[in-house]
Length: 143
Image (tube, rainbow, N blue to C red; front, top):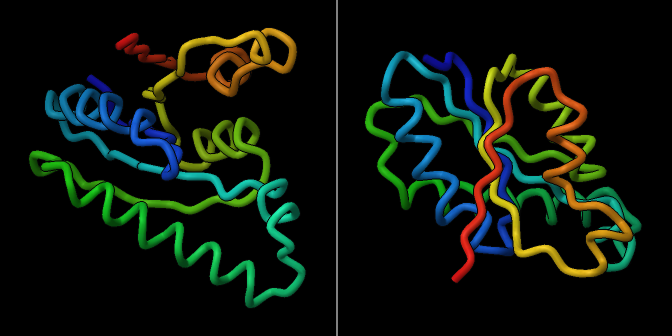
């Protein structure tokens, strides 16, 4: 059904992968699907944390890579090849770029309960859904 599924997650929020990653794996078991799990280290976060030197950024990226590997290892991918990528920049823009780079025909991502700030700023899921050329499955769980 799908040849390439992209699953963007936030390694700091379990809710971003707890439901989305198993759903993507389930969707991918129907055929020979390439699964790519990505996380974005935000430029803004790096700036606020005082990252000024290359070695600090490398450490931040390395920590994110280790956490992402740990998260992906928690799930049985049912024989699906799961690539992992760490990106740096704006969350929504990097997800759109990653979708194009891996040739994704589906993005599976979680979205949180909307708050007032989301209506003023705009959530990443909405931006991605409006700016990619592939299908986007936005999952919500209200518990």
